[in-house]
Length: 417
Image (cartoon, rainbow, N blue to C red; front, side, top):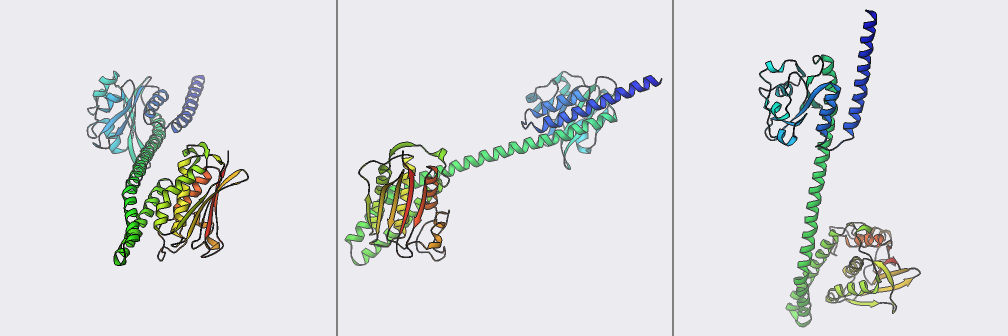
């Protein structure tokens, strides 16, 4: 008798060690799997093995109907099972869910709450059942069931085991749902960001053409008309220049974050972007009554650059100089070689930069003037874009100024090929 008791105790200890090791394995596996479609299948397989059952199933709550549905069941097609609603009232799973309590039924055929439709789909006749609620904190998200114990009946020890599985499974399912929701949120943000980018690009492009016509005619009227008409033309011109500044800011917003991965690099002379930038802003600068000159070396200074981006950086520098230089002031664009670098410099005779703000002007949205009293338009994005473009090319940008009302020089240094 003592030998039999010892053997039974050893068998019980072996089973206990086996269960505990499997529970650790289950926890590690479920918490390292974040695929919502794969998780339910893993859970029912593990529950079946650990409880020595013929099958298992997971029922979750439908967000719309608030009925339960089979997320997975042994031997069943998840797509077919998904279409079988399990009512909260009058079903075993519904009872477990509503009462938030475990349940053992060792003679299912005699229980009127048994939902037999699933037996036909899984070809597994349910004889006995153990089920527990799946909880996240105080919220029940579903039900985990195991069917037909292979030897004997389901016991209170089985309840403790399946509750551990259900708890781990609920956490894993919730994590997978959160990750899936996060992915969908990022995708939606990406879609909205692309729409914003496309809208700004199209709007700024479409506004440039009519605005160019307005600027041209306003400048012409200002020169040819006299008296009050000339004053009206100047008002139109100033407002058109203000609108042009806003369009440039719109373009800058689209390129606030410029990284090396976004560059389309080709080896070409830096003279090309310099000339294109000059063409872009010359009409505006002349309309403001400023003098614009360019100084380029006779020999090509070749660099590995994204030409449209470098052109944009120079346009921003020239627009900045135009904004802070008074009428009849001078603006010069200079390209020169310094060692292994090409320096693109914009020199103006404008209001200059205070010494304590020479480095701050490249910060996003930074304004030298107070935003309540400033006289010059702009959102403070242009120079931050210049810095981003220069650094993406493995170059740099800096500003120099002798002081207030003594002009400023802004330089982009780019490595030559």
